[in-house]
Amino acid sequence: MRTTCPQPASSIQRRHHWTGTIPCCLCCLLFQTVHLAADEPAAKPQYEADGIHVPQAAADEPKRTEISVRLAAEYLEHGTIAWNQKRSCVTCHTNGIYMTVRPALTPYLGRPRDDAREFFVKVLKDKAATEREKLLRSTLPAQVIYTAAGLAEWDAHVTKQLSPETDQALRLMFDIQLESGTWGTLDCWPPYESDAYHEATVAAMAAATAPGWLANLKNEKVLAAVDRLKKYLRTQSPPHDYGRTLLLWASTRVPDLIDSKQKSELIEMLAKHQRPDGGWSIRTFAAPEAWGNGGRAKKLQAEPEFADPPSDGHQTGLAIVVLRAAGVDAKDERVQRGVKWLLANQRASGRWWTRSLNTDTYHFITYSGTAFPLMALAACDAIPDPTAGGCR
Image (cartoon, rainbow, N blue to C red):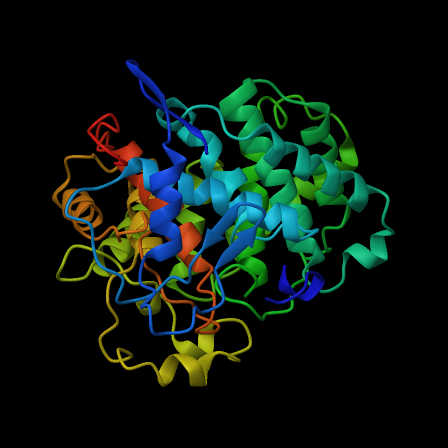
């Protein structure tokens, strides 16, 4: 979370038949050189740490002619390594995404980094030793929630059993819950730290994803907190269609959140946002003033593509992931058009471009804009064979 942190080679396994190691030399060279002209000063890197230099994401970065699973996966590895080395927090847009998305990709990309989980356990110990009142401030509630969510995903997809750390993280998460059923927020950094509704959906998914946690929960105080969360999501209107998308996603893991009619309406809402080119744009899912307290409205309204925002990796990947989780068939025409967009729009560095809603400096949302497309392709059994030549 930015208010509590200074501002600013992995193995890949093809399911069933292939294991290999990313050739770091060529990939790193591409990360270091892409889109930097010799006569121009280098912009601040998006991520940088010992042995890692990931250049800024840019709208005009060339597109690849063939998709590269390896480069996309390496970008995710580099981003979380660099963040964990340079920062002391769990942040929604980078290591939070790594831990909530990357474990589910284990059948395709191999086991996630153990040191990524170790970082989350370290953060958990720090937060568990912090006074409750302090954890209610700033963006700390979101850090606690994403810590629990990341550990829950690890248990669900890597070890396949509940760990003591995940149990502790979930209990801490509910210990700082507000009486309203959700958590505090600054309403500042969209989309991840923009509203309490977003936090509630992530918390619900964390509790439902941790293996056996809800089924074996006996503590009356924590059970009451879970009920408050469910009541909040059932009765509170989402602030925008992005929130409605997250509600649909959460409902696929907490089935009693919505009824079948609401589910159909939410699927239709999501489908209506699809762009003519087959992708989705996060900018059509909320008016500029609807993100948080409206503090990004001027920035968004001044963008050259404001009237007709382009499709982006974040929302296209997320839309497909949610549609598939909600039971929409992978062969559905809407899903297939989205997959086609993803296959045609990966950039040379391995990323899928998404412009930040906040600033035009780091574009950290490009990280989830790369993680969600991989998750979407996996959900549609459309991840290409990474053994195909070179650094693909």
